[in-house]
Structures are given as C-alpha cells and as structure tokens.
Image 1 (cartoon, rainbow, N blue to C red):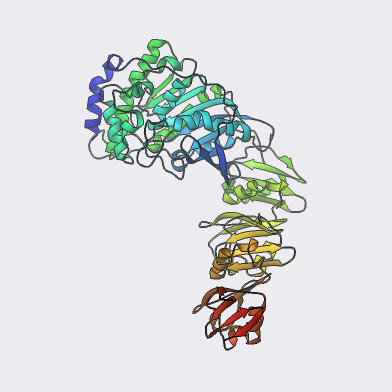
Image 2 (spheres, one colour; image 1 turned 135 degrees about the horizontal axis):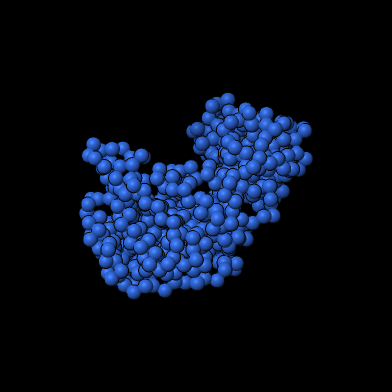
Length: 603
C-alpha cells in the first residue's frame, strides 16, 4: 500500500510546478469582531483551566465541540487577554476529544505558557475546509466555522486577541498551510507537521481519495469536486505559497524509515507501521517540494527533515516541543515557563500532592484567602479552612461554580475517595463536589445536600448527582438530578426526593408545574413492596403488580382513605382518574371509585 501511494507522487514531485493549475487567489478577511450567528449552547469545565464549548454553527447546522486550554495567567490576571494557537487534528480525528490532548503531552506543555490553546473536536477526513456537498452524514463547513464563526466567541467571551497561530499534523498540517494562505493576515504563525503540502500534483488527488475512503468512508469529490475542479487548486498549499509571505512558518517531516519511536519489522529501515511509512514518505516529498518553492519566492521558513520516523504521534509530540520557541516569538509570548515557588501552608499541601506538577503562578489573593496555580491543578488556602489542592474534573466543576468567590466558598478537605470506591469528592464551606466516571463532577449544596447526606450520601437511594442544581422554571424552588431520581426543594414544602417509576409518573404529570405541585415527602414504603410520595395536591402510589398512578387530593382520595388506602379492600390504584358519563372514575386492584355530582361512591 505504501509503495502504491508513494510512487505516483514520487514520479511527479519534481514536476509539480508544471503539473498543477494556476495559483488560487487568497482571501483577506476583516477582523472577527462582529457576531457570526454562532451560539454557545453548553460550557463544560473539564478542569480548572480546560473547558469544552458546544457551539451551534450556522454553517454546519449542528453543535461543534471546541476545547480550550486557558493561558497561564488566566486566573492571576482576570482582565488580561491572550494570543491563541489553533491545534488541528489528523485524518482520523475523533468526535469526543482532539488528538493533541488524547495522544500527546500538549496539555502539560502549555500549562505554563501564556496563550489560549484552541482545540477543535471532530472533522474526520474534513481537511478543515468548506465542502461543496454533504457526504457520509456530514455537512462540513470547517473553514467558515474556524475563521468566521468561532473567533468572535473567543474574543468576546474567552479573552483572546487577534494574534493567532495554527499548528496541524498530517491532514491538519495541510490545512494549517492553506488556511493561512487563503486568509491572509489571520495567522502570524503556521506549522505543518507531516502535512501533505501539495494536493494537485500527479497522484495526490488519488492518494487523498484513497486515504479519505479508508478514514471514515468519505468521498473527496464531495469535498472539492473532481480533481479537475478549481477548488483543488484553491486548497493547495503549494499554489498558495506566495500568500504566506509574512507568516512565521515551521515545516517538518520524517523520512519514513524506522525511527526511535517505531517498532522494527525485521527488514532494515522498515518498521511495523507500514501505512505510517508510506504516509511519511508522501509528507517528506511534498514538504520538500513546498519548501523549495518558498525558498525560490524568498519566503523564510524553519524546515526540519528528521533522518527517520514514521507518520505517528510520538514524532508530532516531539516537534510540538521543538516549534514552541518559534511560535512564542511569533505571537509575542514569553518562551520560558513560570518563575515561582511554593512555601508555607500551600507548600505543605503541595508536598502531599506531587501530582500537581510545577507551579505556574505565585500566590495571589482570592476572596478572604490565597491560591496558587500548578500544571495540573490549584491549591487554595484560607485561615478558616487550611490549604487544599483542587484538580481534575472536581477542579473544573469548582471553577465553573465560581471557585472560591462562588457559592461553595473555600475547600475544607482534600480530594478523597468515596466509601464505595467508585468516585471522588471534596467538601467546601458551603457544599461538596462529587465525581464518578459514569456521572461526571457536580456540586451539591444547601438543603439538597443536607437531605442527600441524611439519606446516605452517594450510598443512599439516589446515588451520585448527574447535574447541578437549578431553579424550577415557574415556581419558587430548586431541583437537582441524581442517578436514581431527583431532589426537590421549595420554601413551602421542604426538601424531598422522587425516584424510579414514581418520578416517571411525576414527569408525565408535568413535574412541579403540573397539577401535583412539589413533593411533600420523599418516597416511603407501604405493603407488598409498594412505595408512595405525597405531593402538594395528591399522591403517587406504586407497587410491582399495579404500576405507578396518581391519586389526587379530593373526594376520591378521601373515599379510598376511608377504605384503608392500599391496605383496604380496594388495594392499590391501577389507573389515574378518567372521565365517565356525568363525572370521573378511578380504578383500583379490587374495585373502583366514581365521582358524580360531587359524590364519591366505592364499587
């Protein structure tokens, strides 16, 4: 396969200047300060400085996930704005996380760097371009999203400037170069790591088609039309080279032979990564052709040809470290890491949490205490609570809740394991945050936390929280969802849980906005394994044999009560009330009650 992919390009590589269409014009875009119509639908704090945005893209008609690694001084300088670097994924980009954080140490590398890192998620085989047609269930319009829709959100809400760089590997390396060329002035730095830097030379459209079919079953004709279409030339880095003048450029590739991160196959120079060998040879050939043209045009570039290495993540991680000084210089960011040390109570807390890594800030004031940032978390200290480390998903939930300045206050415990061994938690002055792999990290506070604790914390009937608390939409109250139900709290009824099939029936009735109102009790047991909740305007009863049904307050309920509820001769309800001639009726296991002209009769 490697030989078949490489041979046509190798034949045509030295003649690509004459084998391609005329150079394509670039776009000079206005600065991205106006609203693009894109809307942030959801924000998930994954850690204290890593956040996922779900952005509704008008161009693509669907929410797109973009993750951000926030700048080193994000917390210490809350009024500062920061340059950004866009990090583009490869051909097999996944839908849940960008490969740079999934496969490399990029998060650790940038933890003490003073810029915001933008990580688009998804886009398998897309080349981060605007496609001419939909294909394979995707409406790819990535260039519009990245260049027009995303930047206004970053500038308005996430303290980014218009000083930008772009780094891509493989497919993303190709895209980094043509996006910089097509949108002059948008990026000050562009890096291609093992990118294919000519798309129209002999054999390349066919190689791209083969690769895209292999990575997701995509058809390159839906991307840019047939190879004769002008769109292929308009996305060819080689043809756009003239438009890269003034951009700080970094280009690298290996040779395809076995390198330090490859497993030898037993054949000299050939690793077991056969596809990676062929793809890296393609990258090397097209990168050489591209670099030669840049040199002929007098456009400077840092070009790194490694003597070995295949098309694989360890080499791209290595190159990311190598290119950092050039990226930092281009974006006017200090090259070195933070200059800080830890001491006192925070220093003692760090000693017990070596996983925090190096400090990335000095101590700084937060509310009535201080905090200090580290590569993988933060330590908070106040006179009343002591010093405690916060990190990971719990740190993200804490940051999303306003950290020490929010409703939770300062931490009062370190991160601890739950008794069931399934999750983790941290207590705060005014609540707790609980996390498990299945439910994520969520804050619990106030009366809901108190009742949840009384019921047994995560070991009680509700399990772990699956969301934060929220105000009920039309009544004065609060609700929070858990694995096995929900907890409701209102000033008039107190705080109570509703769970299982009773919660399902409550949902059918419109929750607290429906006829039943708020719960007045948590679920309580009755005979034969049954359960019930009392609500403001009635009850929901459930048993294994009868199911869950509503008995509203009023004459029918009063008549059933006189018969002894579910323990009397009627048993459990087996229906809600329903209309009959002249009134309503409700059925029970061993009879029914009618209500006609205001009079209840037991049958």
